[in-house]
Length: 371
Image 1: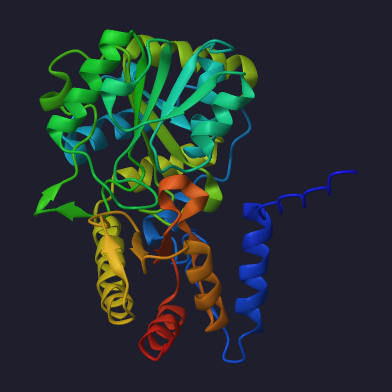
Image 2: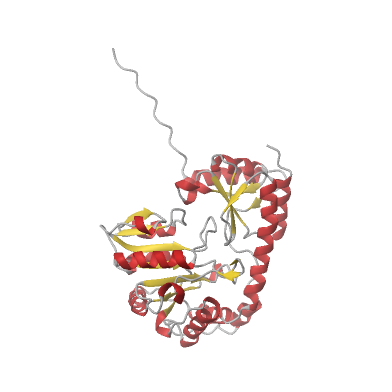
């Protein structure tokens, strides 16, 4: 007698398929929908940007990979004024936004098979993509004691996307100490750091002297003005820290033609020198988060973390994909937490990078939601 063939296990839908179905459902909502899944800035770029761009039209020569002097000075002064970190010109470097650095750094550092890249347990995909591209192994682990001996690069993200977790001075110090034991490069991705405060204090940088003392060797901080200045379309960011590492990265980038365009360098210099527009944007995001938080909690969600950043990380104690599908049916598009790691399986992420009229629509839908 022939044994009956077992039924194949159904394939789990890919993140792309899930997102496509969520968007289809949200778009079909008769009252319109609000996209709280796409984390792309929507507010106007500040006047200081407009003025700087108007003055930066002429660029006949090749831009400097290391950045013009005015930009390097602006970066140094910004870190001192805003982040409490003292640097020299040799310790800063402009980047094409921050995502390309996240993806390319394993290559720029010469990593490959046999090396380990550590990323947060909940994380943006670029950390893993960069490691996979060079054949390195990826470990998703938040506890420094569990980072393996073969670790060559460690990514921290504070405030963290998606759950808004921030790292304290002591937590950063512990991470840096372990990285030094391993001889690994450690990088703080701090792209949301100036948009919130925790307990009335600024969110610390990995380069803070309370963390590193007077030794920045093997330590870098990455930053982007995409969110603070609504400049995502211009791809402007920077990396700072260990001068020897910055020099190595700059040399590699020069050979590969990875240069920030000259007009963008001028604009970046201008927006880093103006704190007023950042304060206005911070107040706008804070207001949106507070308004959305009230509606999300009224809908029965428990919010975890979310003390900083541009997101609410919330759960109904069930599959986050199922929750997201139900929300899409009422015209609220959110991201399932499993997109960021297995521990996010019961969560959804609400973003406030959305115009106020759409945020109002989402808040109204949440307040009238009856399961």
